[in-house]
Image (cartoon, rainbow, N blue to C red; front, top):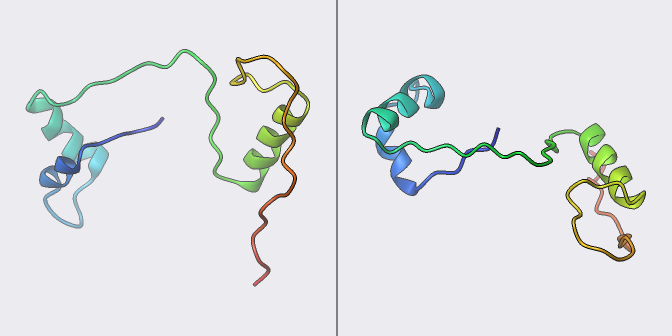
Length: 85
């Protein structure tokens, strides 16, 4: 999932050992300050190189589900790659 917070979320965290999911969100909900939205469209994490490669392939083949407008696919002229250690 994807979470978006106002800066006030930090007021609900009690200490370094406090868990956002197990503690803070319960307190936010108890205060009536928690809302959710169920997205019915395409969602894909991009946490790994494998995810990035998959998403780039979808884009370059014109099969990207998030692309809802017409026209030819735009292929980037360059790619940013991590530097070798």
